[in-house]
Length: 227
Image (tube, rainbow, N blue to C red; front, side, top):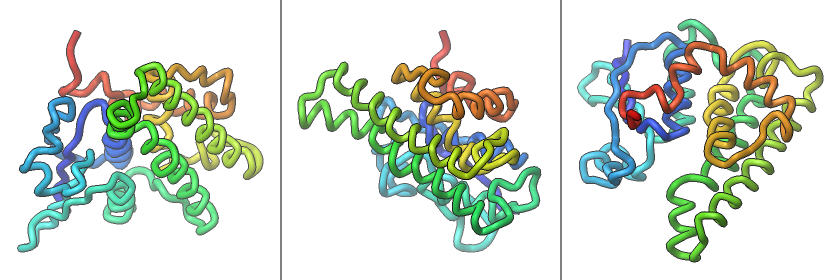
């Protein structure tokens, strides 16, 4: 069985996706904490395994002479987890091609359309290169949350009666990606989820009670600041 190591940061929503998925799949892994606030992800050691200097990286050591496979994008890591351990606990991709496509479409709304536009590097460039104030950067992030979460909710409801989760009554990779996106929207950018997105609010209510989701919250990570 591959030995897994997660290189991550407590406040990274992309890292949170992997924490949730690994917990749902009941997979053991070790963690290397990368100090994003102090630019450790831009240092020589981390850049050697992730040239894009992005967080997280999942290292999968399959025990051969080539050494670990470093998976440097969170969705690629999520799909590796599902493909390498399909029978562990829950399956995070549905059985039919149509439902898998629905899951992947929802995933892409979060990881391709929403998250990059409110990523730290984007907000940093808005301020440094374009002179955006903190208030303007918060409004930028809030507005993108509203646009993309609305698209997500419409895609969920377009498929017919809504189940407990994003695609029916079974957990999928869409839910794994939705959780930290909602947490950011509510906790960082001030989105009123129940008012703006009642369907997503109901889905999130079902997700947030799961112990795997609770344990993955940024505030419960060993590298999070302690009050």
